Length: 163
Image (cartoon, rainbow, N blue to C red):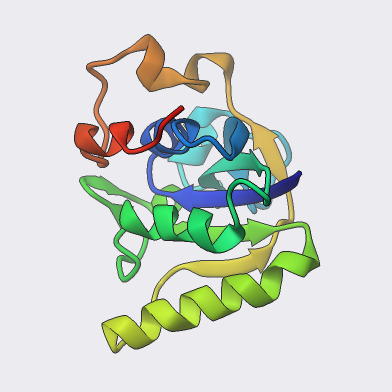
C-alpha cells in the first residue's frame, strides 16, 4: 500500500473522482502544506496557505503511480496558478505531495513528460508533504452526500472506473 497527497482544486470532486478506481483503497480530504496547525475550512479560505488536498491510499500492484498520475492530470489544468475551474485562491493550487521518497522518480518523470507534451512548464507543485490535517466531517465524501454540489470536474468523469 502506498499513499500520495493530491491537490487538484476543490477537494470534493477530486475525492469523488479517485474513489471510483479499483486500485484506490481509501481517500480523505484535508488541508496540506500550510503554516498553521489544524486549520478550519474558514481559515483555509482566508489564505492560511494550505492547499485543499486528497490523501489517496492505493495498491501499487493494482494502480501503478503512473496510472494514478494519469488520472490526476486528466482532471486538472496543470498550467493554472492558484485556480481550477471557477475556484480561485491559494487553497486551489495543484500539487503532488509525497511522504514516500521511492515515488519521487516516477512523479518527476511523469511531470517532465507532461511539460514536454505541453511545451511549457506546469504549475503543479511537487514537494514533500509538510503536514496534512483532515477536513471537517461534512467535507468527507461531500459530493456523495450532496450530489448537486458544485465541482470543477465534469460529472462524466466520475464514471470512468469499474469500482
